[in-house]
Length: 503
Image (cartoon, rainbow, N blue to C red; front, top):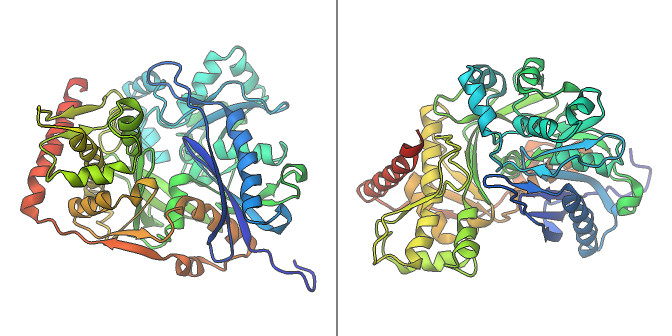
């Protein structure tokens, strides 16, 4: 409670810890950005299909960017109402409870080393159990097999875990531990639900799944609502103790930041991967088309659910064009290149660099480009990479509609690729639905800020948050059904050819 004469604090610092960079953003009481700092960090690829991050790099960048963002805002930690955290989901960290030191590099969500164990579980008939309790499919994408791999491959780790000496967390949980100087080992429902160990219906860790996946329950964090005061930061880190009051996995945070609070509202985020969530309200819709059923958020003990389609590669394909084969020198060139050519020249890219996600879920699929002729050039490759993003989104929307989730009347988009006008226009054409781009594309960080602000009284409720959302542009579909049909047929044939050798 404020003392007489004290001014209410309305600024919120959000730590947005992503797959390739860490950002800290300060928002004011109108959810406007007033300071931002960003740092990219090293990716580690020790073997084909393996992806790792050094938690020390992430922690270093969190502190540096948080301090820099405060400086850019002309604020100090004492001016903050709260801190929110949003993070790359599924990425697993295991650390020593006494020293706080990780026992291994973090194993990233893209990592596929758990595929053999997942195949064993499927062969043993475990998928129905996992599906019914977690809303997930058995896949190395999720955290559980990553945890088990570390316990089995780091000397003495399994014994130490069973004795309660080790802690597991997704990145949010690891950062919370560090920010509170080891005082709090907790997470939120959205991150917990991505481990393959959490019962999303009973809202608790599932002992049977822990035994099945060989993860000692003693390692697991306490699970809270998204808008919740988890703890306070150690004063020496930022210059004052600040409550950490909101946590959400990046995709659920983006749904919240896009103000998709009503059933039937949907958002699609285009970053390294592409993730589409459709709000289904208080109903946990079971997908018959290999989508995920996931908590969207939990406020005051009440869970709102979503259907989710996960595409592993979106912006990563553009990055490959730039860094892998040198077709472009900057991602923004894809808009111009795609515009230069009148059509795709029959060229299709299936960007299965790390397997195919929803609705196919084939971890063994690999990327392919079809339809190349001597007339194909750099512009066609750039266009194919953008078209693939729209085609994959189309597949997700079709699957959601078939599951009974309905087709969204409007799709709200965000993430770095959403700044590409050509992509947004083509996306609207392929899904035959208006595409709304918000005034602020930083919707993931806004979602975490919204949660932290709700927990600390900066904002009064969902209606207040909805009024803070604004649209920058709407892309209306203009393509006819006859023009769309051959493009869809070409994409579907390319996907069939990619999957066939692996099935």
